[in-house]
Amino acid sequence: AQSVAQPEDQVNVAEGNPLTVKCTYSVSGNPYLFWYVQYPNRGLQFLLKYITGDNLVKGSYGFEAEFNKSQTSFHLKKPSALVSDSALYFCAVRDIGAGGYQKVTFGTGTKLQVIP
Amino acid sequence: GAVVSQHPSRVICKSGTSVKIECRSLDFQATTMFWYRQFPKKSLMLMATSNEGSKATYEQGVEKDKFLINHASLTLSTLTVTSAHPEDSSFYICSARAPGQGNSYEQYFGPGTRLTVT
Image (cartoon, rainbow over all chains, first blue to last red; front, side, top):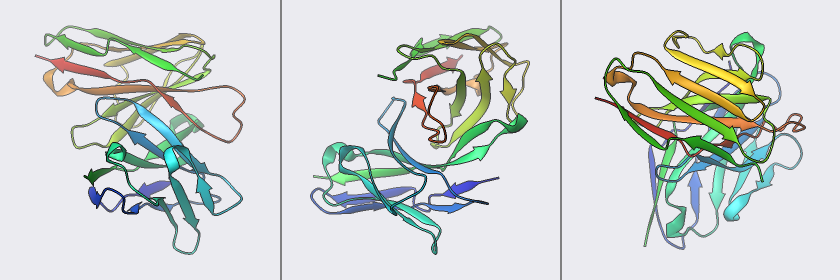
């Protein structure tokens, strides 16, 4: 099975500073990777994806992620954090579920706290 | 576009009763819908994959008879928690894939339903 790991339960960053939320992956074949964000008591919102092409992927709300094959990483980044970016961030990977259906497997999530 | 709704947003039920949660794709037809359960420490667990007109495919360890999933139309899937127990209390989230996405595998998520079993 494919999997992603998010090594940090929480990341704190000061407003205006750059932020990084880490994700590493373990896949067989070509990885299809995603980042989602979840605000309190809300469903998940899609931020960006990597399927093929440029290693730097740009997404919603000024976020970007860098695909690094040699380090098997797909870290989420933003040049300047906003207080409103405070949320739960999930890295995810395309996987195959029971019965052979395509599915997405999520990491355990990283809580981002942006401090004013 | 690509909006998914869930109803109810919150529900409290007594132990032993059943509760139904609806998931609707509002502006697209979803051939595949997914049901997740989110535990208090954040992890998101896929419970089952629901395909319109066929039986749901459950992930390992998920009780089929307890969590009944019906995908009756291209815009509606329901999750019924039968004989609910307090340990079923959780945040249940559905998602849907729009057709024609090819290999993008983007999913559109509902806002979630908070179930509390007393």
